[in-house]
Image (cartoon, rainbow, N blue to C red; front, side, top):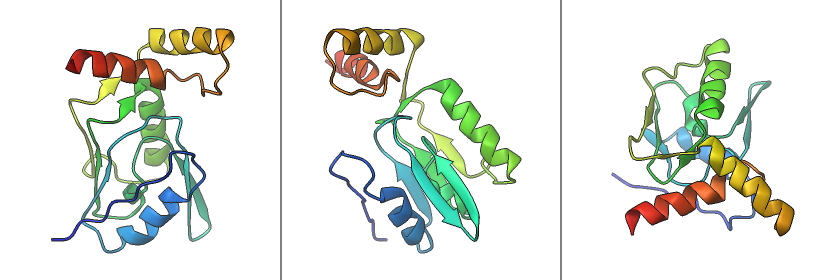
Length: 142
């Protein structure tokens, strides 16, 4: 069994989702291992356009097991919204999507912290609480 890992330079807009979509045709499992809903992967299949933020783009292919790994920080409302959008388009997520029980949850206070930090020192965050959630995750591991 071989493994292919797609790694970007963490600047976004690199086409990682599109590459994963192409490689999924030869895969059994597609996993997202880090990041949060600040990411956006746009995939076009036939003339249908899908925008995914948390769920791996492999979900758009029948029979592919998709995993959201423990390195991903999850905003529950964003995940539920994405799941609802996929279901409304008849994409099977119930039998094809697994979420690690060790994924860290983005809490409302993470978002508030990040927005306040951005006011005092602008670094260009998305304001979605990703950084503070990772801070908490690493603090727990220490």
